[in-house]
Image (cartoon, rainbow, N blue to C red; front, side, top):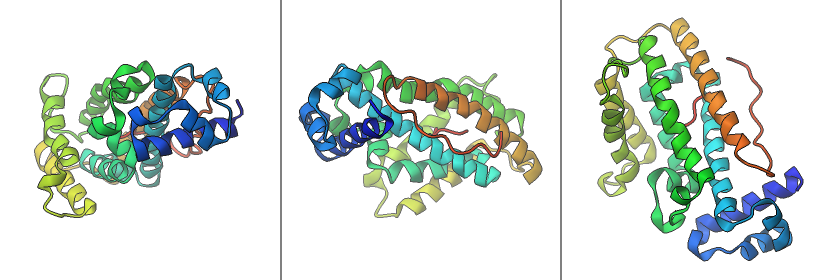
Length: 242
């Protein structure tokens, strides 16, 4: 399948998933919207689960690439409170990413849990988190050492999860206000009082970029017989959304 046709199939599948939910969409629906035969879709994705798993992986990569571009444009976003603030905005503004990261069972069904390729989006990010947090601590960007504090990741996840799931608690606040509040919580609870100067942040940003570029490349390789996402041109030595 050509890259252009493969992208068309994945685009169609993503649009239908957001509109109707996983359970209601068929391969025939996807093929019809993409303008290809149903057999063509099955030739490259042998099941509905694997096709939509590929959609999730591609969405996870797209979110990661967007954050990579932001990190390269402004290395100061390497600090955790800014990373999570921008991640929140990116994810919540993309319907498919929002469903994936908030575990929207109505939209996704058991998709992300039932496919190896789908689990790689969330599982891949989780596997890289200890390395990411350790790197931040080593550069003076995280107050506590994850190597000696096994509860750190849990505390961080517990403190941030409510911002993704708590629409009813937001009281009508705009997404930008919620992102700012998330950053404030992370800044006060997890970062040292004094952050390093810009030159040191640039060094840390280059290392985070290199760390996550490996994750994004690995995720891209999990899309067999489908087009790999185009990476941004490398301008600095990438983070996927935490």
